[in-house]
Image (tube, each protein chain N blue to C red):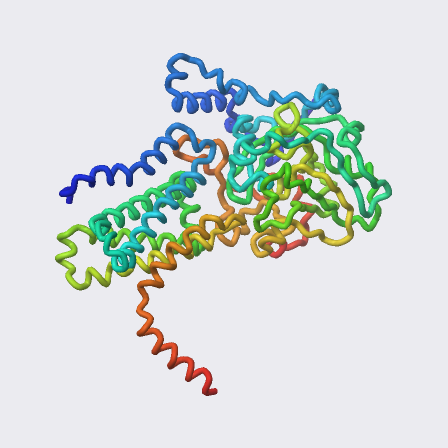
Length: 330
Length: 205
């Protein structure tokens, strides 16, 4: 007999809303803006946005997307509608506004894509994206994404366990951290022309964090490849940390011995730490982290919920930080 | 108050941003998180009217042709108050969802939020004392009370710079429009004497 032990991060049945309900609510809102369309019942203009991810994977990746393994991660969570997750993004390479990435990502070229692996590992070099994923089966994981700005949404990612990918490169004993870098190409990323940020975007994890089963390398969402504005073609997803840790459009993975520099930490070290674990007990210097707005909310009233320690993934990751002060190591 | 023909049109112009904001909100334009765009835009409009309000005195003193603006002094000030109120309501409802602990936390610990509240309190006091009857009633005290608008300007400046994440564009745009009217109002003759005094003091040891 299978006995299912409920983890704290699982949600109970009453919290579950059918995705269709959300989609129809969204549709209602669009229609109220376009009353003519609503009256005649023709909302087909937006049908593509509402039905999920309709992007066709490039030929090199298509076979892997035909065989996606389902997992129990986040089963029953209220998933954000696809068009919410793809039009409300923080991706400063495309601009500061939440809507900028969706507007400016059209000409971005995620295919072909190479990733350079370097540093403290036996196997290094430059690999095509398909070569990195071909030895793994893609799986779907529904994760909560909590932004440091106090909003959150639930996204069904498609990808591979980060640890499984990293192990293939055989990191050596000096590999204490793993460092990631986003593509630097101002011709594709207009936001990289200036600003206060030292490009390219950089992020990093401690090696044991990277090897934790929750750490995920995503190549897709909502059943197909990542839209450009969500970090195509390959991005990190570390759901127990604030969203900025989940670096997008990765071109470099480096195994290193010392704690690497990370973009937001470089920009404002007193506000954004290296660890950046979701923690309602440690406020951002300028705002509280005790609550969050779960998106999408209502037309006027947001869906405010209490923020959970490690974004509700305590059971999976709390051991990583045993004996560490999370106030000091924010 | 409505003795001039153009006044209704001016009212429409001043209300247009508000109508657009509310229309956009209710039509789902700011979906899925209306807090950010609505707060930013209502804040910008409050700032625009405050900058206008602060500039009237120095402008009309220097350029006599612009004296016609004096007619809208009260009106511009009230518009600033109105947009500040909308901005505050947007924070309370759209951003914090009337969540008491969220608001409490912000008010107790976030300097940029309580300095924004300070600016709002000043604007409220000025709005309440803006009717002609109040002007008469307060007499001389009215003028000194309404000089608090400059303090509100400074508070807004701090409110803007204190909340920057990576994008300082809005703060940069507003800074000259808040600082220059303030500088123009300072009586430098008086200050120079003070500066001299402090200089001799500091060089003597």
